[in-house]
Length: 156
Image 1 (cartoon, rainbow, N blue to C red):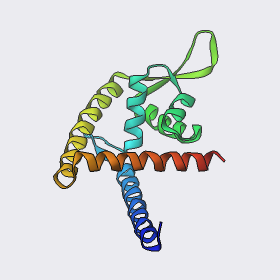
Image 2: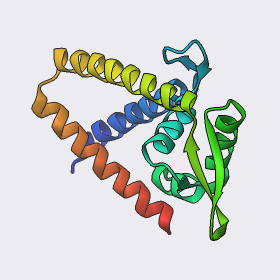
Image 3: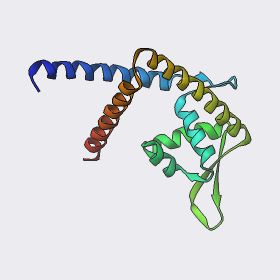
Image 4: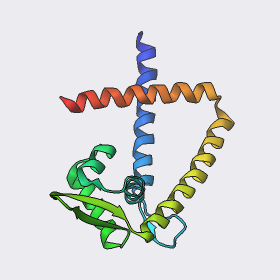
């Protein structure tokens, strides 16, 4: 790679950082998913994970989201406090706390999935107005490689 190519890649990576930071801000901002209550994406995605995997443990949630048990617990505790999820111990297993969505939580999860489908469809259409399917596929491959590189660095 020559110096100019290196500079172009570096400039591109700076744009990726901006995208990641902007995405994080969007992810953290509370939204109304169609139920009149404001919730952030972390809460909604955690709720949907629980709704889709009845009986999952806190550590199971943390592994699936690649977050610490503490971070997962904080989201779960907020969901329990809002009456969207419940914690239960199963017979014969007094150590593990199992998580279940309440009826209200199941409805919120359904609304969240509808919201996400509309938003992802809108995003895909916007991207396809400017980029070909092949370009988007290549970009996703690059992102996957970036994720892999970061995961390897954080394992050390």
